[in-house]
Image 1 (cartoon, rainbow, N blue to C red):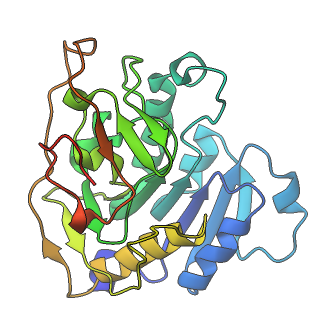
Image 2 (tube, rainbow, N blue to C red):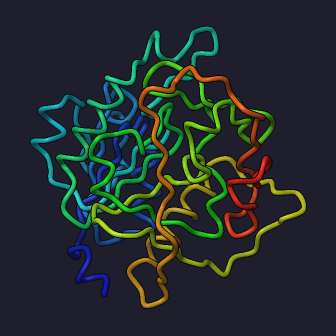
Length: 268
């Protein structure tokens, strides 16, 4: 079934590869894949001699020219971390749209886009309808940064490991969980992972969990254990970005299967 979905070997891009550590992690899970990395600063990556693939300077032309790709990882790059500025002032939605658009056009049909820790919602992109999210019991969130609406309205803030949702009428519960997307139309796919999970402490190492979530979910996606789930909720946001916000909702920091219904005041 894996051969039906993705070619073997697959072509994998680490978008924003930094020092190249992500390429080494990808190699552990995809030993036969053709792995590439790109970034706007490659001094550290090019100084290494242990990278399993080629790295190149990231521009719209080079990303497209080196494609297409079967899997694209964009982890903590479609965002800004500066706490002193509002995200829309230094990283507007238009820039987010353009960057993800490049990845969208470079991804093969049926390919996977893994976008973790984004400043904006993937569901707001005009081409998001061409994707279906992959969900798993071990995907507990899609990042720690605050979320913003395309109009510049702040949608959430962080409290510990959870999102405090400031504009519940502009979001669904899944806007704070979904981070793996298959370039195929249809209902979301849910996969169950039989892994140990400390539900009491809900504390995991900072980087390894993301790979466990992404790769584990992908492995089950291409196997026979996948089952369909209910369609993703849709919310109309046009015309009401500044409406008075109802009570805040808390999302994240728990397994998806344990989350309360999104109509509840507290989800998760």
